[in-house]
Image (cartoon, rainbow over all chains, first blue to last red):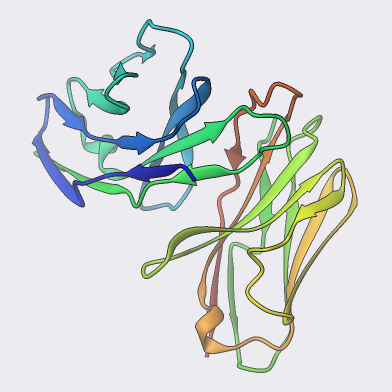
Length: 116
Length: 116
């Protein structure tokens, strides 16, 4: 069974600085999707970025980018020029693409604090 | 699109009462998920529907919980009778599932349930 591990329960970053959130996963599959979701105090789960395992190029969405290391099964999220609005819980998630699968496997989350 | 819509946003009820949570998925999506989020257990998948049919309800905690999806634009999660340990944030998410499994889940704002 696949697992997703976020080993950093909490991180802090100074406003305008860069922070990297870690995520590792375990799978025997060669093709899958990985996601980062953001959950601000409003509780809304917001999709931040998505990575397809068969694509070697790291996904980027404005100030958010990932470092996808398939061999190491690592999927870290880098937030550049951190803003106060980036403060939230961040969840990493894995989705198999095998036929008949549908579940997302979520990590336990990392709480990001942004310091003014 | 308005995104996934959930109602109510907050619900406070007394133990033993029936609670009904509602969800309207994104138009055109064919998969719907109900999750429960608590501090202790994180994000748990309760039930998954595909094309209005329940595919996996193994995450439903007990017989007090039931979910229906009478049509493609509406789903309910019912708890009867409710207990204090049911207090949590309940999320509905929807996606357009394809045979290749390359879908992305979009979450609603959640319903915060408090059972006194």
